[in-house]
Image (cartoon, rainbow, N blue to C red; front, side, top):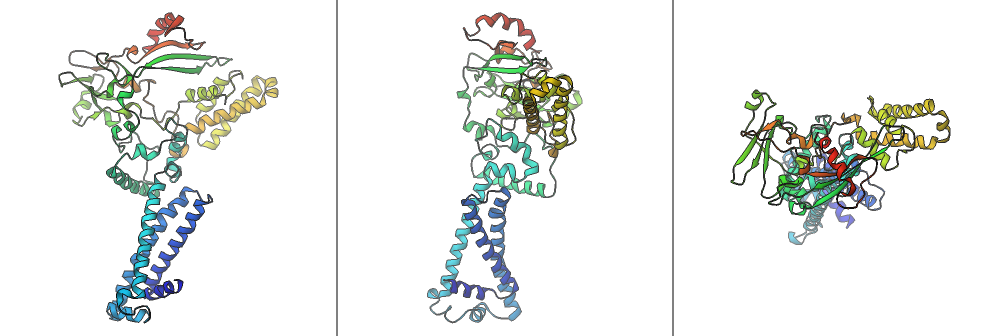
Length: 492
């Protein structure tokens, strides 16, 4: 077998170009097999190695195959020989004995062609499978995707494949994603991408093809109890509890309320936003029972902006609110609170919430400087203000430093110009974002009606920043009076 292969290789190597083709095909195939064995043994797992194995080597293999017929054409022109004459010259009589269909030469051609097909099909399949893994998506373009990779691993969808949301279902989706991926490779290679990556991502497949493969409106019913814990900036970093009942219904008739009312089957909300950024609404329309649409226009905008608006509207779906469903970035206070609740930042250190928040909120030119600055700020505070405590609680102080650094590294990525609050989360209503993009008094219909700002449409409070978490006695128990007292506060 080896002798036959060597003889065939010598025969097709009609000139330098042919020899280059043989070297490329043979070396890329052998290297591919060796790397696959190393990967199977667990000795080779790097994403860049995967790019070499599944993209570079098959490409070199195909280039080598293409060079072989080109070499023969050039050799025929250079010698003036026909194809049968060139075959007669290049191969031994034993290789080309008649009849041709029984000759070793034909068997060699058919065998190597079959091997080529198997290799290319197998390599292509492995390439597609490898490129669909989260590890590839997050690490192959390390500097670009590092912020998204970090947040993905700490997200509610950390066990969901990236392609399930970013590609979707069907052949058309796969083809579109691969074409888009080719442009991404070019962008990364030549530095054509923006820092930070702009949002919203408009290439996402419709929510019906992605989100609703696991979630759909008929699953949203009843209420969900949610407890939010934040810590005060006093000496004891006092925990403050907010407990509320979220109405996650899709607005079943006749109860026209619930967080998922917007995507119920019998409802439709559509809108146009400034610069199509889905932040500042120009107008919002809601489907009416008679099939018409009621439009609410933003009276705070200049009319020149209104006149330039095209008729291209967007129908509201899952990602208009769940815009950070996976790649969730925290604001500084939320980040510190979360690590205090997990015990990464010890709460029994005096003023630890205040000082950790100060440390992570400062502007730093790069990550290394930030790590030094966070440690110096916290350590210096306890050495200067609580010198005796610093001697006996150094381990706790070190833990606070580590927790604050973790909060910073998780959310701030200097290489991609991602800072605190670069990517806003529209779930909820921080500042004027989220729900308040539409639920505000600036959007007014022709009859003077505004979109509801009644907080009880979506949730009801049991406690609001209380020193004690809500205790179940009845739905509201003894906290009902407290709930009524904080209602005006919750409307802001």
